[in-house]
Each structure stands twice: as C-alpha cells, then as structure tokens.
Image (cartoon, rainbow, N blue to C red):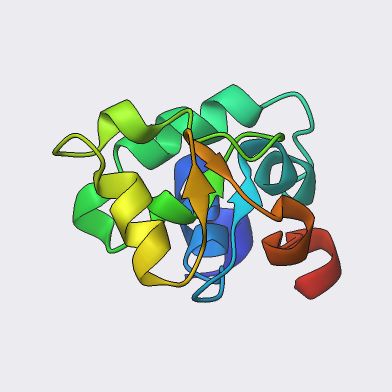
Length: 109
C-alpha cells in the first residue's frame, strides 16, 4: 500500500512500528513527522486502537517522557514493564535520561 493511500491512523502505526527496541518517541514527534504538528492527541487516539496491529505503542510517551498513555495498557504497570524489559529506566512514570533514548522520526526516517 502506498503511503499516500493510508489514513492518518495507519500512518501513525507505520511510524510507530519503526521505533527501535530500547528507544522512545513522543506523540508530538510522530505528529510532526506526519506533517500534522497539532495532532499529538490524535496520535494518542490512534495508538489506543493499535493493540491488535502489532504496534509497539509502549514506546510512545509525552513530550516530557511521561507515561501518559499507561492506563490504556492491560494491567497496572504493563507499559512500564515493557519499557523496562527493553532497558529503559522508568521512575515515577517518567522515562529517565529521556534525551538519550529519544528517537526522532524526522531525523531517523
């Protein structure tokens, strides 16, 4: 399927699937990459419905590194557990050394 024929949610999934293991990005970074700078919230909505699409939504956090979407994952701390299993340190719902593990799709893709 050509990128121009994908809807916004599918474009979000395509970007999120490219986030490397052990790295995170933000809702806004994905929105900016897609040319929709004010659509960070829509990126979040897209990721809520991504569970059955094999999308690593746990690697997407807010612009400050906070796990604001964690309540959309099953279990109490599943998002944090998934990140920690990739070597990312999370304390009090915040990714530590955020700048070091941040992946910017505008620079990487």
